[in-house]
Image (cartoon, rainbow, N blue to C red):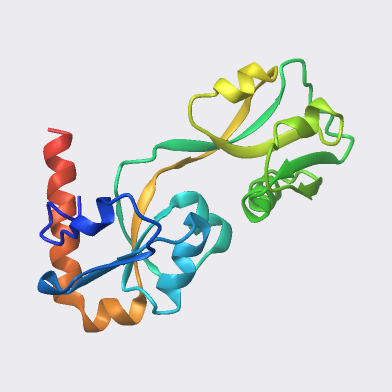
Length: 193
């Protein structure tokens, strides 16, 4: 999408372990970081723009501008539980997740008492082993849930990739950023036409 917007950098597509790629002619530099770190690089000014999942923006609440839903990486944040789960609201609900802030906010709005157990991977195992009652995680197809005898219990929020901008960079490089944003927006309109 960025190449179509006039900001190509062919090196990005090469099979390499490099992390920084530049196209001096187009005055653009790309770099690879973990998805959970993109917003930090943008917020702190190491990058003017970034692409981050809505899950990251909700979880870390970075001080950035969310400019555009890129309509890619579409999935959802959901509560999942064993297929025979019945919520007993008289008890504290035990929740496994790596998205602690999203889970806290969601259950706070519901007025539900929870105990969060923060895990970083294989979250689906937690209710199977009796560690927790439910999980809060990203669900794309639901195949992993199904294979582990779990199902979506409640949807929390739709997730997709978002174009984000550093607030200072947006102010001082507004023309270039708007050009990228408008081009990406036009591409999305064409795809959905």
